[in-house]
Length: 367
View 1 (cartoon, one colour):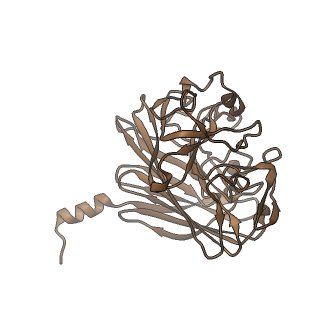
View 2 (tube, one colour):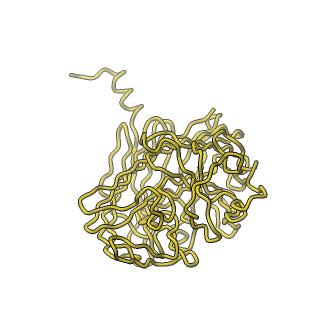
View 3 (cartoon, helix red, strand yellow):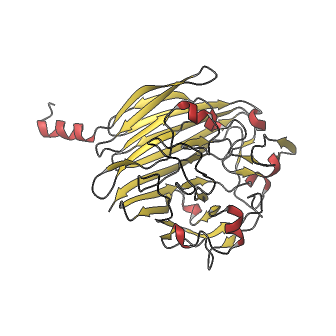
């Protein structure tokens, strides 16, 4: 049946475009591509195959002004240097594993240590530092980029050949889905996350202290001096960690509190409510000046809220200047830190024949 002009116009209006470009070559000679996904409202997400990193994401403010709200760099060279995981896919294990060791099926494993005596975000060369293979690119009512990486047995000390697939999907409602899937040929541990730093003001010369954050969690996970969980879950009631009602990040970030002092601010995992119900809304961030809101949905049990405490003004921002302390925040959906060594925490073990699958969504709006 022939479509009338109104139907054709609707199809065009709903269309989401995906464009591919060259982003450079790594020091090891691997080609890196950049994919630009754009929806009808002008949301533009740039993702590179090096680390599967989101390099920028533009979103409208309350006046319709489009600005990038994700911290990143201008070129591949900068991403290959030491940096705090800007925009990266993190694996095999997001967050810390104490002393870089764990036991699985009566076998002891020793991991690469890259955070003092601990293993952080997958080790010295985690998923953030490899070139991902492109499996699928689609455009239409959704913009889809599907990436894969084979992490070989004992890479960074982790057992099993782990095949990981991450699918980024930009939707017409201004949400970005991140679907993580993995299979293994040997019992292993896995905990994947996305490490974008957000600043909803769109002005990276400003801190995120004027953002309001809300986290649906009655408890959080206290840490020791190495930022490793003590093994306890603590109530947020009466503490700086109570974000059950939206409050300014600045309100309690410098509170006289041992946990705040240990983290240099917020750098903790919150125990999200209603884990058994699966995929649900778990956190929000709002910037009153721009009117932008970020809402996070996930099926994970935890979320690491990190207030950019270790940014120190040494890293260059794309439009001049540098990224100062607390110029971005992270909301990293995940299982709890050090879970392989914490039997009371939800399991991160992946068995042969099983499939790891988890979904997180970042949804943008303005008011």
